[in-house]
Amino acid sequence: MKAVTVPRFGGPEVLRVTEVPTPAAGPGEVRVRVYAAGVQPADLAVREGWSPPGVRVEPPVVPGNEFAGVVDQLGAGSFGWEVGDEVLGFRLLQSYADYVTVDSSHLVAKPAAMPWEQAGSLSASGQTAHVGLSELKVGPGETVLVHGASGGVGTVAVQLARAWGATVIGTASERNHDYLRELGAIPVTYGEGLAARVRAVAPQGVDAAFDAAGRGALEASVELVADRDRIGTVVDYATAERLGLRSLRGQRTAARLSELVELWEAGGLRLEIADTFPLERAADAHRLVGTGHVRGKVVLTP
Image (tube, rainbow, N blue to C red; front, side, top):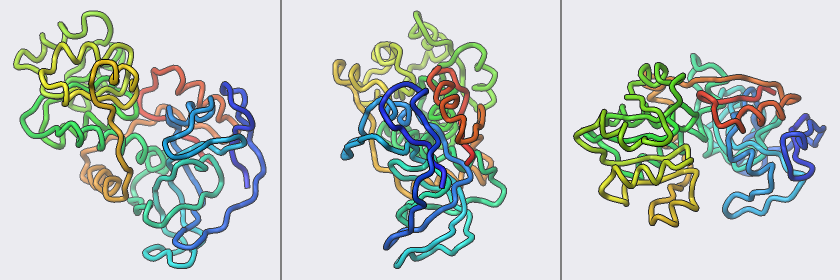
């Protein structure tokens, strides 16, 4: 099968499409023919030499931690799935490929109406947003500030917080303000003077702040949120440690993913796809994500 590999750590130019052995589903696993695989900032970090917690990454490695496709092989004990089922799911690596094997408990059924690109882009960003807002205890009647609100994680965080009954203020460049209004957020421009701009639109105050952007977001949040335990980040862990704030991490689960799929089916979750690329153009996909200015997600389509 074809897979995108990192033969040595470095910039986007190191990515190669390589013929590798097609994996077989082991006990408790299924094999999925991949139709779409989302591109995450974490994938760029792996390409540069970062190892996710609990794993030692050595080249060559196949990046990618979310996907959607069709079940084409069942391992022993992989209960609940049949060959031909359309699914979306997650695993730590290996998703930039024609086929991926995965624990059968890391899949959920893809709604028939959900486009493949959206299905392949949901798990990582969606679950990151779900974990973060859950850890910050965002709830009805509150005001939450989402930094990087137009990106992949931010797009879901805005809509999820709204679904949970919160008012959302979202930071983004001015070109994305109309987009944020469509998602139900009050947009503000990031950068110097952010705290004053947020106070102007939220004189009642801000209850929690969720950072998916970095770039000074945490420093501004400290000026706005009284309880530091309700300020957290999924990107700027060094600053969080320095300021005594929360680094938001948690387990991805099929239950979280199912909740997000149900919200999509109910019409409460819009998934924005900035661009799609074939495996052969994975380097271009990484370059685009690396700009830090993507609205929604970038997706590979094997």
